[in-house]
Amino acid sequence: MKEDFEFTKNPVSEKWVILSPKRAKRPILTPGTEPPCPFCPGHEDLTPPESYRIGDGQKNKSGWQIRVVPNKYPFAPIHEVIVDSPDHSASFFDHTQERIAKLLKVYKSRFLYWQGKGQVVIFYNYGIAAAASLPHPHAQLAVIPKNVQMDVTRSVTPENIMHESKYFTVFIPQASGWPYEVWFLPKRRGRLFGNVANPEIDNLAELLSKVLKKLEKILGERFPFNFHIYHGGDWYLRLIPRQRIIGGFELATGVYVHSTDPKGAAKQISW
Ligand SMILES: [Zn+2]
Image 1 (cartoon, rainbow, N blue to C red):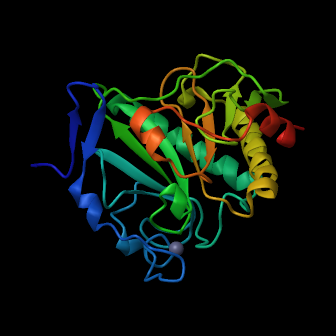
Image 2: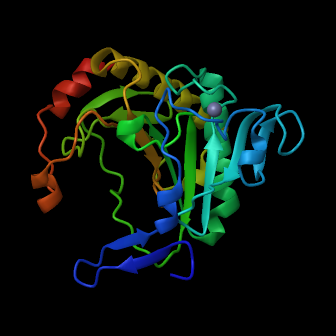
Image 3: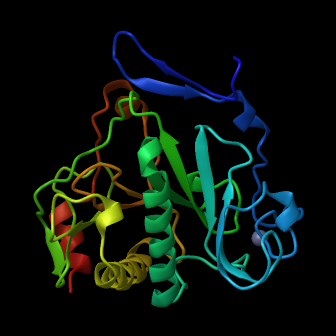
């Protein structure tokens, strides 16, 4: 393999995979076994040179509030890490709405910056069960070549609606892949995430923060989760709590079995 990674398609299923042996070298850190954290202030020299920051201070020095750096262990030609906060033990559960809005604005600005280069996938892993390899909270952005077909759910008609705001419908699809997965679908449809307006972002920050707090009451404090922002037209944000482990049947068939009724789940957290 000449590059650090290789995109390859299964000729039968036509599904793509990324081979990225270098990722095996990335440190997997569990809480309590933490050597110097590359995302903490004062350790800026442990990451590749930074691409973007919000806050004060000089490039590659402390003083930042949100910091964007290339991923040291990339699985795509462009793969960035967006560090939420200088606070190592912060999380989306306790970020202020203002910080969440700022983060979403950084995601948007990086999306716009890279959109000409391929399919911009923004995703977040929180907790070991959600595949976070470093505990310091961060999102990631990967730009996937346009020819690589990704198996991503397109936005659906809202059902099991939990809340409607001026800008968003918050709901749980009846055919959810995961228990308590929550969708945030903009009322203005048919746009890329890069076209989202600031009042929408502020509203999304409020809704995301509220839903996480409501889910904590059901799933436990600081439950592991992922979210991603759909890269194509008709964007949405999908939040997936990772309480459940995929079993053999799901791996064999791609058909998910779960015991939570999406209707009931939506009722539990609607407001
Ligand atoms: Zn840290």
